[in-house]
Amino acid sequence: MLTANLSIPLDRESEEPIYRQLIRHIRGQVESGALPAGTRLPASRDLARQLAISRISVVNAYAELRAEGFLSAHAGRGTFVAGERPPAAPNNGQAHQQNGHANHTGAQHSLADSAPMPDRSIREMMRLARKPGVINFSTGSPPSDFFPVQHLRSAINAILERDGAKALTYEVPEGYGPLRNCVRDYVSALGIQTSPDHVLITGGTQQAIDLVVQALLSENDLLVTENPTYLGMIDIARTRRVRLHGIPMDEDGIRLDMLENFVIDNHPRLIYVMPSFQNPTGKVMPLHRRRQLLNLANDYRVTVLEDGIYHEFRFEGETVPPLKALDETGIVIHASGFTKNLLPGMRIGYVLANGSHYERLVRVKQAADISTPGLNQRAVHLLIERGVLAQQLERNNRELKHRRDVALASAARHLPPGSRWDTPQGGLYLWVELPKTGPTAAELYISAIQVGVAYAIGNVFHPNGSGSYHMRINYGSQRPDEIEEGLKRLGRAWRELACDYADMEKTPLL
Ligand SMILES: Cc1ncc(COP(=O)(O)O)c(C=O)c1O
Image (cartoon, rainbow, N blue to C red; front, side, top):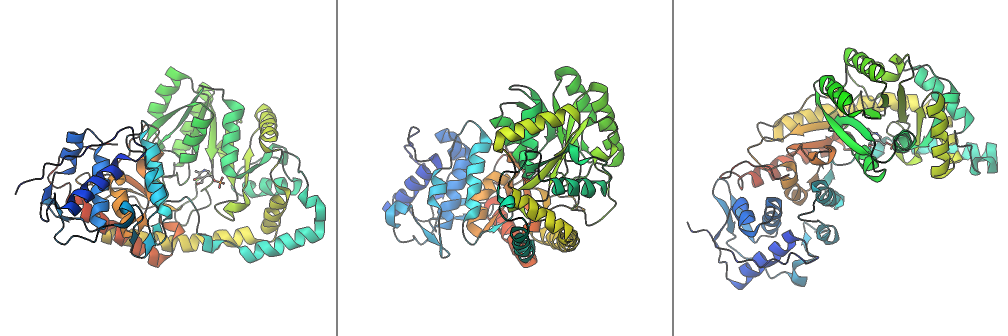
């Protein structure tokens, strides 16, 4: 069978992304009859090479044209012009209705094709997850059906009754006193001994870690993280203009041999880790590794920032104490919050630090936003006092375990053979590695959106852009029936696209 020789005049200066230009040209040639039904199109890698564009652009264009009915794919044989041509698209094909849902053409237009930073185009592409009807596994959110809305209403009413305008004025930058006491008690149950004088209330954990970076690092200083790491920290490093270096992980977390070599050679200012239910991998650093990490930090006098946000999300296995509970020298700064486990939108987090670090953090906090809203601090305080947090943790973990089990069973049923994942003992995420015989997670993305499922693409968690075959699935945010359906759709999208790769060399582009 002959393969079409496509002539596609691309305008590299145009605002229109390359993959949309491709769609426009191929669609036009199908509609004009220049590409008759049954014509085989070049394999995506060949067309990418011929046009000197990225393969992901071709893969995405083919995926969209398939969804629109212009092309069809046959396992192992390639991509063909479909037998029956769809009616000419209105509006130059820029505003299609599919399955009753409007395409987010705006978001698609903003998809930068050959952006110099691979993760920028990937993150723009991930906005498509908000398309209606998509089962969205891509967020970091806890399930909104867990939120204690009635308890919050009652707490806010009680606070306004009790404190009136006092609840609505500026708070001291350190935070509302009773909440700081409450944090001291809360972390003491996790094994951390501290005093309210070392507790700073922040606008969520995100602000807590941002303040630490601002307080401890200057422009161009070095920050070390696990690789992969929390996307929010990659953003902070970029916006605060500090250099970020990711150290690979093994089964037990950050590799200390590599970390030590790096510390000796480069003298980083801060080591950022998530020892419990690491985001995105879900891994837990065992006790011996935590102790070794502390020894290393003390030997070289490098401060460790512990992000403990998922610490209490354990539904199986033995709890391992936070690093801060093992810290005898004050080398660890501990950040966490009542966001994932209670109410993310209230934006209440905290940071625990000693001595001069604490003073500096308070100054940076004051400069950032004067104080965390007093009403929100009081509301979270009252919810904790009334036992709502304890109830939530108990109920959430029970339900999350169930969702995890559904995710594991559905993944085994629907994800392509050769996919790999570990069984998380807590947290919200399943970290999946796709088989390298098929598309990367980024290449699969548009097809996945078209069948109605979204996930977080692995590259975005890797400061060096690796992790192409990984995806993070937030099973916790979806109901069990949606988990099953979402993973089923994901398997289908992969199988449909995999045929496009069957006769290709497996070279990841990203
Ligand atoms: C590891 C980690 N740290 C911090 C945050 C930010 O959380 P918060 O909502 O408390 O600001 C997140 C949110 O996804 C996270 O995953």
